Length: 431
Image (cartoon, rainbow, N blue to C red; front, top):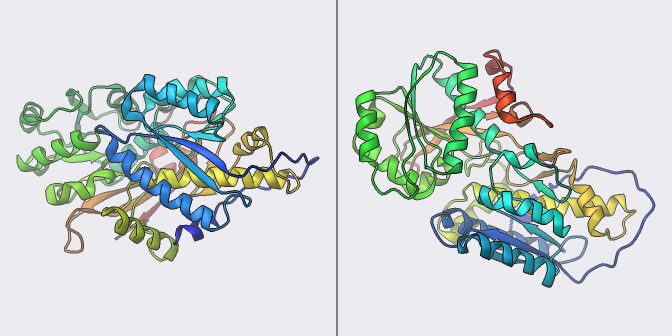
């Protein structure tokens, strides 16, 4: 299994050895993982669970972590917030898990972060996107192993301005809940700063789970905005794109879809060429820097064989969380003179940790936030796949587009200026 080779790429930073204290080496390391295994967001949780099971099997076949095998217990976020918190407490207090990976929902992350600190349990935020976690609070036991909404939205703005610098008007169609509202606030704040002459001609926030976008599409056909942003996901995004495509909305307007990497295969040929797609990191099964890496391509093929689908961004996020957990133990053991570390030493090792999942390196900052590069592209339809893939790929430097430590995203974005568009390092690939 090729994920074994990827595991070897985890790069813990080297600490000078201090006085060694050997904690008792356990028979196994047990983690709890929360993910949506039911409901609309199961489109993310189910593939992430499949990936976790494959990757944990590989870790154990390669000798575990410091010789200790890893096991996981999954909690369904679809059961609701109260059930999630109850199960979270049970795993920590009754089962004695060594770490928790939580969660997909930003709302759940907001609830779990203070609970993790109260319980003194290492919590890896493996997928949720809210930027507020570390901007509004300080946590000792909470870390995020991927980026957050700010670099995801800012990179979408930068890609748009680099590929369509002369557009004049924009509209938004987002789900009516916190993610839809917050992501639009970030995107629109950045856009107003970097291109202040753009006119917002319409803002639509249809209810979550809407089966019909005919009202919004009719209005957009009349307004003819140059660009339409939608940060929607799952069935809502798929339905909107299919109905928009059927009615010719993309003939005059370009869609900007920062989460649509996860929908490409489901949409088939409904997503036409020329639309902008984000990947919530540098997550893409045709990653231009990974196509010659047999470990990466082998994993993609094995995942496709096992699940029937290509990996999407939650799979890549899971690989990052697991490799961060493994890297933290290895870093803590090295700092402990090769002896088994206690849980506090592992928590200490998370800060400054650099690791690799199925993309570029990620580093955990002193505030617990992961810094991750961002890959975006423009859809291309070809005979190679029965769904749109990405061309004109750009990968933006995560260091430059992530809100600095100690700053609030809205304030930081407002302080940028149009020179920022060319100041950000970007690697461009033609595929």
